[in-house]
Length: 549
Ligand code: ATP
Ligand code: MG
Ligand code: MG
Image 1 (cartoon, rainbow, N blue to C red):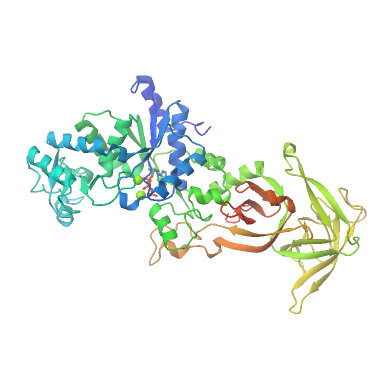
Image 2: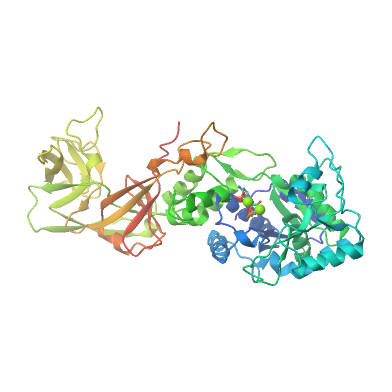
């Protein structure tokens, strides 16, 4: 279902299937580096890679690109597996790791040396930068470039055996120091790093570089179409060079435009900074554009998949309006979330003519557009809560809510008219004395017309809860762009989280399942928080887009 529409990638695959290039086989992979949590940009890549595999009854591997052990962790690995599954995709067998191939990669590197296509280089990083040249100037050959294969092999094995300190020697591919493509100017393919690896422990003190590892991992797995983002276009010649030099199976790298969202930062490095510097409360903070944050906020997997489907796959960079993402979840929850009544900022209402001690139970539908989801019971009594925002002593023009002398309907209940607002010493309205009209349950009153409909909760039956009102994390459209003496941190929206400390819920919400969406009538879409047993709800999105210009 995530692969309904074709795109330029499926056109390439269709052609390959016509010519029989891979015998009709389609194998893709999603290759995250476990150095952070997945974000909405990764969701696009997941939907694309797994979606393409589904479309052709092929397979998509989950492969951890784990060649930088210092930055990686098992926590990240576990979170990535959780997020991919939650999004609704299945990888075959166990997830794969580039580190599974360290032995094979070491052998490939030895092959390159034997073919005279790799050499051990002793230049320092600074020297290497100088020798590399610039976009305008060709580079210079390293003085170590002409070592014999034999010497190189000995040195490379010594590197592996721990004879050298970090940075003392590297293995480089021998390609072309004057190539206009700097990626081809004898790139490093192995470096010495005396660090522990989360998968291979202390077995290795040399680690392969991304460009060397990636293509060969693809080749080892028999990946047919290696889909990556546009930044890797300039690396494709290196990807191809490596596979040709080693005469391996040759997957085809295809680049697509990464997802950029306005009002959002999608760089793992910056998201990590938000977490590390405690601008947010962890990777799964509901303000974060991470998959785990969105899940906790109440985004459904379906809505994220719909969004990814809608934005499509192209070859040119653009910026997508985050409103499209919010629209996708609003649309899904409007169709599928049950309704409930919650008063965020309560004010007491007393129905002066309602008998003391009397109690009624109203049966209300769970969803106005879907009878199949049934009804629920909502208790009613003499004491209610309504929202402060629904009362105005001096109403603005066209006011349709409560004000002294005016009638409003309680959703699913009676029509009431406010007689008096009781104030505390500071002049704050603390209670509304109202009359109810007993002939108005489900029927219009005679002789007068209520102006609006408001939500309410029976005070005696209400549950108290904390409700987190989330909004966009950044108040600037492009927090990530270059700004004069400002960084993305300066654009954090201080209103991205406000808390309704003392919200009053209708009692049916006691059994709300964490993560399951509700429409709190007239307020927005909410779900119970996943990380606490307490009654805490998170706002997923408002009913309407208040950011629309
Ligand atoms: P970041 O830039 O956030 O650090 P990354 O590309 O370094 O991301 P990886 O873990 O390497 O992170 O990403 C795994 C896969 O997800 C890659 O194939 C990458 O191309 C893809 N991906 C990452 N960010 C985006 C994005 N914004 N839009 C689409 N695909 C993305
Ligand atoms: Mg990457
Ligand atoms: Mg990165």
